[in-house]
Amino acid sequence: MAAEKLSIIQKWWDNFEKDPLVSLDKLLLRTEFMGELERNDTDEILFRIFHKKSEKVRHRLDEMLREWFGNYWGKIPGSMPVRRWAGILKDAFIAVYRLDLDQTYSFLRDIYDRDKSWLRSITLDPPRDPEEELLRTLALGQKDRLLLSLWMRLCRREEDLPIDYASIGLMGLRKLPEEDGSPPKDLPAAFF
Image (cartoon, one colour):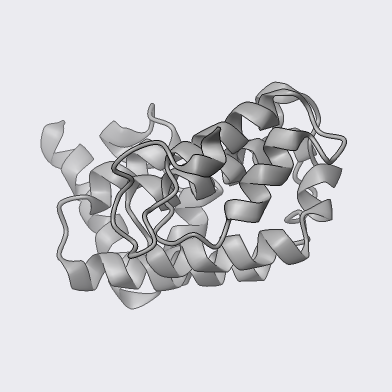
């Protein structure tokens, strides 16, 4: 039985090497059985599959996930219920931070600033709020100070967003890197 489960993962790897975008899409949309990993959330499956892989393989995942987001941004695939799509997006956002995917992070940071209205249109309630998860991912994955004004806006509650977003703004300020890009040494002045 263990050999059969291993072969399912190996089959996915073989498919990923041949057509990475299609294989990643099937995994993210949960249309392909992932053997012993099936019971996990999608972000955990991606983490388990990729976290010990070489930089080259993780770079390939980064390129593919960035392309995947680009293909789906502003859309809902087929006749998928919004509730399910919001969950898929949340898992994909979490994977970006957990696997430290820089290209995808930069894409999400830039597109969020330009087009956050789509995320808001598919938010049903707090447990199914992909915008909140994206903001958390952006806060945790910062490598520069480009989002300082976003965190300040969230803390000041300048937009009509749930109060939980203010705590994400505080987290973003707390995780704000130093001017040289190094991790924060102390609470930045903006935090106060």
